[in-house]
Length: 478
Figure 1 (cartoon, helix red, strand yellow):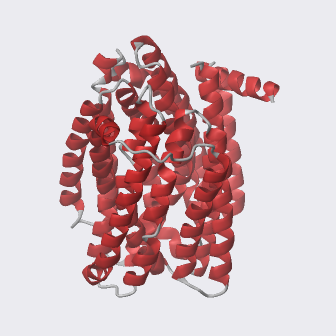
Figure 2 (cartoon, rainbow, N blue to C red):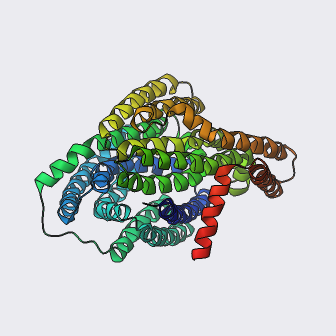
Figure 3 (cartoon, rainbow, N blue to C red):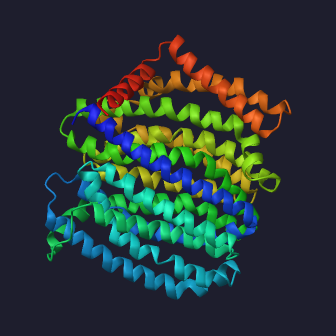
C-alpha cells in the first residue's frame, strides 16, 4: 500500500473528525452558556457508563475483522449477529440497573436519563461491523458523510431543544440523534449487508485474536473513565464539569488527529505485516508527521487557554483553565502511543498488547488511589505523570518487533517538540497584557503560526517539507 494512498485516506479521516468535532464542540459551548455546570456533571456520569459498555461492542471483533487477511462475508455476518445479541443484553442490564446507579450517586434524576441514553448500545451494535468494513477497505470518504450528517442533525435538535427550555434533555437528544442519523447514513452509503449465515467457528477464530484487544480496550476505557466516576462520587458535579471541560478543548484537536491516524494506520500496517522494514518505515513516518502536527497545536492551546475559555464560556468556567493546560501536555504524547500500539497490533501480537495494557492499568489504579483524596487537580497531574511513563512502556516491544527503539522515537520528535515549545514561550506572555480576550487570541495565534512555520522553514524541518509536498500533490490531483 503506497504512502500517498495512506495519507490521502488520512486526510479524509481527518476532515471527517475535524468537522464533526468542531460542530459538536460548538453545540457543547452553546449548551454550556445555557445550562449550569452542575447539569453537565450529571449527564457526564451517564455518558461515562454507556461509553464503558460500548467498548464490549466496538472493540475486539471489529479490529480482528480489519486485521484478518482473508475475512469474508461469513466472518462479517457472524460478528454482526453476535453483536446485536450482546447489545440487547447489555441494554437490558443497564435498564434494570439504572435505579441502583441513581441511588449510588444520590441523583434520582439519573434513572430516566440512563434508560434513554442506553439506547446508544443497540445503535453501536448495528454500526460496528459497517465501520470495520469501511476501515478494512480504506473507504474513509464514507465516514466523512455519515458522521458529518449525524453531527449536524444532532446539533440542530440539541440547540433547538435547549432554546425551548428542555434543559439537560437537550444534551441527551443531541447525543442520540447524532449517533442514530450517522448510523443510518453509513448503512445507506456502504454496500455491505449481513448475509443469513453464522459460524461459531469463525467467531472463535476472530475471538482468539480479538479477545485480548477487547480486554485491553475495557481496561483502557475503565482507566480513562475511572477518574470521572470517582470525581462524580467524591466531589461535586461542578468539579466534574470543570475537569471534563478541561478535556474538551485539547480533545477537540487530539481526537481528530489521533482517531484519523488510528483508523488509517492499522489497516495500512496490517497490509504490510510480513515486512518488518515496511512496518517500521510507516510507523516512523506516522510518529514524525503526527508529532509535527500535534505538538504545536497542543502547546499553542496551552498558551491561549485563558482568553479562549473567557471568550467562549465566560467567567463561570474559568476554573477549567488549569485542567486545559494539564491535558494539553498529556494529549500531545498520544500520536506516539497510537503509532506504537498499532504496530504491535498489525504484526499480530495482541498478546503483547494485552500485557502492556494490564501493566499500565495497574499503574493507573495506583495513581488514582494515591491522588483521589488530595483533589481534582492532583488527579489530573497524576494522569499526566502516568502518560509520560506509559510512553516508555508502549515503545519497549517495538525495539524488538520492528527495530524501532524508544531512543530513536524520541530523536524523531525532538525537533517538533523544541520548536513548539519556543512557539508557546513566544505566545503565552501576550495573555498577560490585558488587551481583551479576542484581540489577545488573534495576536497569540498570529505569533504562534509565524514562529512555528517560520522556524520550520529556517531550520529546514524535513517533516514540514514532506507534509507540504503531499498536500500539494493532493491539491493538484483534485
